[in-house]
Amino acid sequence: MKREEIQIRDPFVLVENGIYYLIGTTGSDPWGGGSDLQLFVSRDLEEFEKRGVLVTDGSLSSYKNIWAPELHEYRGKYYLIVSADRKDVGRGCFIYVSDRVDGDYKMLTEKYVTPAGWGCLDATLFVFENKPYLCFSNEWMTPITKDGDGSLYLAELSGDLTELIGEPKKIVSGKNSGIAIEVRDKTGTVKGYIAEGPYLYEEDGNIVLLWSTVGKSGYTVIKSVSRNGVFGNYEFDRIVFEEDGGHCMCFTDLKGNRYLTLHQPNDTPNERMKIFPF
Image (tube, rainbow, N blue to C red; front, side):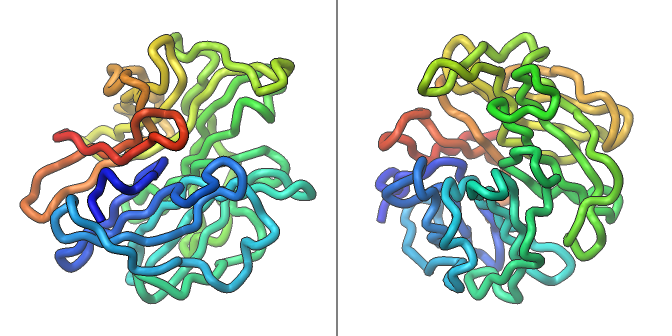
C-alpha cells in the first residue's frame, strides 16, 4: 500500500538492515481502543506492507487508549514502548522486549514503567553517555501539580529498562511555554495546557528535545535545547512545525539523509504520516 493510504498518528520509524519499520497509532479506533500495533515495512518510504501485529499475547486486552508506540534497539534487543489506560490503574506506559524487531514482544514487567497514579503517556527512550533515560508526558487532564499544567518529565532508567532511577525532573511546562493555548475536555469542565510527544537526540554537543502542543494554529512542534546536560535547562529554540501536525521523531534514511516525520492533520480519520528533510 501507498504511504498516504495508511491512517496513522504518532508515526515512528526504526531503520534496520536496509528496511524501514513503521509503527504508530493505527487501526480503526485510534481514540477508543487505540493502536492495533500493526507493523509496516518498506524499502523506499513510499510503498509499505503489513508485517504483523507486535503484541499478540493478550496482555493489553483489558486496556484502552493504546497510543504512541515506539520501537528502539538497545543492547542487542528490541523494545516496544506504548501508552495505555485502564480504569483501575489510570494511564501509563509499558515497555515490551523481543529478540526480533518484527514480533513476539513480551512485557518487561506487568506494571507501568512511568510513575504510578501520575497519568502518563508518550514515553520515549533516550540513551546518553551509555545510560538509558525515559522522557514522558504527565498529561494535562491529570497533572500532578493540580494546575492544568501538561508537562514533560525526564528520568534515568535502570540498565535493564525495568524501572526508573530517582525522581523524574520536569523539563517542559506546557502552561508556561508561551506557545500552548488552553484546551478543554469534551465536557468543557477540565482545562489545561498540552506538552506531549517528546523525542530527544544529540546535536553539536547539546541535547535537543522535540515536543508537541496545541497552539493558536493547531497542533505544533517545538524545538527546545539543553546546553548543560541531560537534566539541564531545556530552553525554547524555535517552532519547527505549526500547520496542525505533530508528535514527531527523526530518523536517518538509507542514503544518510536526516528526516522528520509527524502526523498531519491532527483530526481523525484524515491523519497521515508526513516526512520532511530535517
